[in-house]
Image (tube, rainbow, N blue to C red):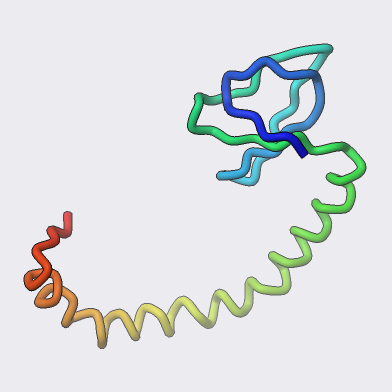
Amino acid sequence: MKRYTGGTEVRGGYYWHVGTWEIATVKGETGTLPGGPADKYLHAPLPLLFVAAPVMGAAFAIFLPFIGFAMPVYAIGRGIFGRKAPAKEAETGTVRV
């Protein structure tokens, strides 16, 4: 699969945005990919999309319960152990905004 950046003129087809996991459709013979130079795209052949879409949906459905249990554990851990972070940041001279 070839990589493209936003704003590039490409052949018609389906292009997967690497950062947001969205599919951009370019209709007709040629067209321009949305976004700017910071947006990265991969050309996605249609047969690959028929396989990848259900796999990504199944992975989301399988791991969603684990994410639901991990988030409160992370928040509690951050609340207990995260209080030492400002002193450590003061030592290193970093500023948190």
